[in-house]
Amino acid sequence: MPLPDDSNGDSQEQAYEILEQVTVDYFRADPTAPGPFGFSVLSWKVDGPRGFLVKINGIRVERVGSKAIQPRISQTFHLYAHVSNYYRFLRSVTITVDLSACVPDPNQLVGAYINKGLVEGINADPDLYFRVIGQRDGSGRIHFIESTPETMITAGRIRFILKLRAHADLIPDPNVDIDASFGLSVDIPTVFGGSRLVAVSKTINVLSPWATQRTEREKECAPLLTHW
Image (cartoon, rainbow, N blue to C red; front, side):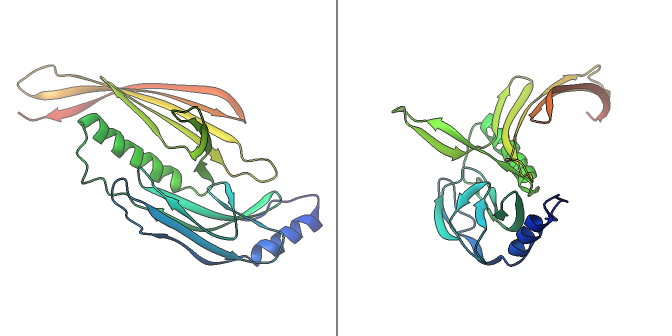
């Protein structure tokens, strides 16, 4: 990405020169479309001069390496080169999980589609990524894994939670938390046809280091033509 203006011109110019020389020999996943509960191997090789770090979705890795991945849903991985407080986006690779063979209950199916859309939306922006969180197993040990969307479906309401980070120059990557819920109700005034009123309400809480918690509430009714 373009480097911002900096009072330390020499440092900025040096970082720019290093990042310009970074090249990617390969960044791939094999297979790119594993089945449910399947594994894929993510491998990469990055070349360049001394003085830069390599990160995948915000996690530091060696310049050459591989890692076995077992994604629960489709996921995109972004490769970056970092020099001090500057970074350069290099390449992306997507692992697509085919859930068509699974037959979950209706709520699980809806939740899977919601999660898929959320992941695709976040992965489309190279400046956002799912952050690493600590998770305790049955024996009490803590493992650090990449977060995934949390979706909860109850009668008349859908809620999802995203735990993200945003790439930022000059400061450590800040946390961005999103907690959103949507409600739906339907009122049919007549069984002989006419219009159907659908009331949709949503509550979105966004927590970021730049602003305090913000809540947005909207409620709107839209007539939908019903045929009988």
